[in-house]
Image (cartoon, rainbow, N blue to C red):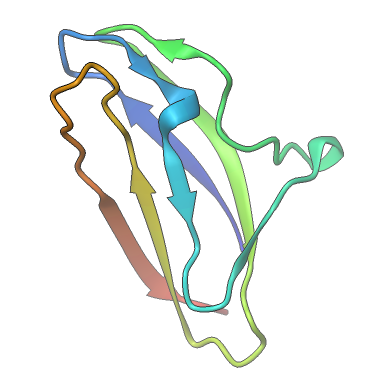
Length: 92
């Protein structure tokens, strides 16, 4: 299953996108294939007011009927905040 991830920085601080974690739980594996455009999280910083989109793919077991994707940005400034976004849907 392939999908696009967009992170928009509405904060006043820069976000280090290398610190964003993405997981495809329930036995799914993320695909890393540069030729197909699945390079993982961008190796860049996201300035306030900007957004960044990248492509991700996960392989789910053939028996999977639903998918759950979790994306967590990590704050390295010391305040320790994070907010995990959880997306769910049907596997076709």
